[in-house]
Structures are given as structure tokens and as C-alpha cells.
Image (tube, rainbow, N blue to C red; front, top):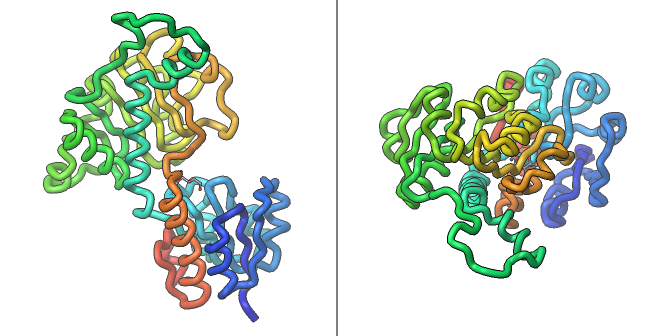
Amino acid sequence: MKPAILVARAVFPEVLEKLSQHFDVTSNQEDILWTPAELIQQLQGKTGAFTTGSERIDAAVLASCPELKICANMAVGFNNFDLTAMTAAGVLATNTPDVLTETTADFGFALLLATARRMAESEHFLRAGLWNRWRYDMFAGAEVHGSTLGILGMGRIGQGIAKRGAHGFGMKVIYHNRSRLDAAREAACGASWVSKPELLKTCDHLMLVLPYSPQAHHTIGAAELAQMKPTATLVNIARGGIVDDAALAAALRQGVIAAAGLDVFEGEPKVHPDLLTVPNVVLTPHIASATTPTRLAMANLAADNLIGYLVHGKPLTALNPQVLS
Ligand code: 8YV
């Protein structure tokens, strides 16, 4: 008998087909957003789960699903997993690193350009029929090339953004991260390490790429925004909750910083209502990894983790490999 798995959200049909060759698959192609109780119900009798960042796997879920052996996240971020509880329950967790790095770095840069160069604001102006003449200062934004790019969090995606900034746009790149990159990597990224206060105070554009953890909650709030230049832009492609969205909306309105580009939000898919009414913000619905090839690669890697572990005993990208021993 094939092991039973749950694919918790809609996914590429070809990935479902691949999974069906190895598993008895229950899928959610209607993409219903299950409540935690419904998720638990759907997980009954399943040894594996294909999840996305939207499904929370915590001690309560694990206690109610004793047959579960692996949750394979179609995301590099895994703050929807209580990793400690999963490890304690002997449930393997996997994510999808590497396959989305360059695509996400591209998007971070796109959001930076759109924000600094006021693309959304000016497009809304044009669509509203308000464009009736050229003006010397119309939608004059911040310079990107040659400016100082600050990166908070310097993992794979941060390094991809640094390279784009340093080598593509001639930017001075500074970063802050708990652990400093070695000299060779810093040179490859064209980036130098600075303290967090130095980063906030010096950069013209601040890119957030750090993983979410309770310690990272509101890493950027009113106090941090106040340390930035009034001409600075802020881009968050990391996770909702890293920025205090209410404080950011107030800072944007009061001109504490010039503009923000946000792909992730506290409590998404809800967006803080104040962010919807400030003009100097570019808002996108968590799409930084959304190209078809990358999303397919992510889905395939999640599927291959399920097959690798449940069929061959060898997952590809385990987050808690302690479970294997
Ligand atoms: C995912 C992401 O698309 O990989 C991540 O961590 O934020 C996105 O690429 C999203 O989390 C859905 O799983």
C-alpha cells in the first residue's frame, strides 16, 4: 500500500502526478483555506504533508496527527513550522532553499527600483487621468545607481541582492547580519559589514531579507525608522512582522523616510489599512518568488523531499536532520 499524503494547497498538476506515482494523494486543488481544525482533520491518517507558508504546523497539530512523519514546505522560510515541536515529535521538516534565490533577489531589486523611482504612485496618477503636462519635479525620486544599499540579513538572497547592487548598479553595499561573511564572500558580493545603527543611519535604501523569528519581531519599528535618512527607502521582502507596519505607515505619512516597498505584511493577506492610504508605498502580494519556473522548482523540491524521505529514507533539504538519526 502506498503511504498517504496531503497536499494542503493547490499545486502544479505535474507535481501532483509525480506524487501520485508514490503516494495515495489527497489534494486541495480547490485551494480551500482550511482552519487549523480542518487541517488537522485532513491530516488524519497521513504520513506526509506538502505545505506552504500558510499552514501552521505546531504542537497542537502534531499531537492530533500521530502518523505524520514529514512536512515538506514549498518555501524557503519556515516560520509556519514550530521546528522544536516537530523535532520533539520526530516529524521531519524540509524547505526549498537555493531554487528561489536569484528570482527573489531579482524581485527585491525590482521593488527597490519601483519604490525609489515612484513607479506605483506615478502609474496611479496616470491611470487617474491626472497627467496633463510635464513638470521638472514630477515624481522625482531617489537615485539608485551609485547610492548606498543597506541589507539587513545576509543569507543567500541578501547576497544575491548585494551582487546586483554592487556589480549592476555601482552601489556601495553595506550589510548587517549576526554572522559576518568571510572576506572572499564579502568581496564577491562587493559588501562590507557594519553595525545595525550604522546601517540604518548610512544607507539610502534598506533591504530586509532576514528570516522571521520571535526575536526578529518588529526589528524595524518607530525607533529604527527615526534613525534612517528622511530621503531613504525601505524594502521588505523578508516576512510580515519584521516591520511594525503601523509605525511604518505613520513614518511614511510624516516623512520620517521617503518611501517603502512591501511584499510581505503583518497578518497577511490582510494589509494594515493605513498602508493602503499612504501614497509613497509600493505594495505587492507576497510574490517575490513568483515566476513559473521558480515556483515549479520549489514545488518539485518539496515533492522530492516527500519522495526522498518516505520512499528512500533520504530527504534533500532537511531542516531538523536530528530526526533522521
Ligand atoms: C513562498 C516565501 O512562495 O519561500 C518563501 O519563504 O516567502 C515564498 O517564496 C511562500 O512562503 C509560500 O509558501
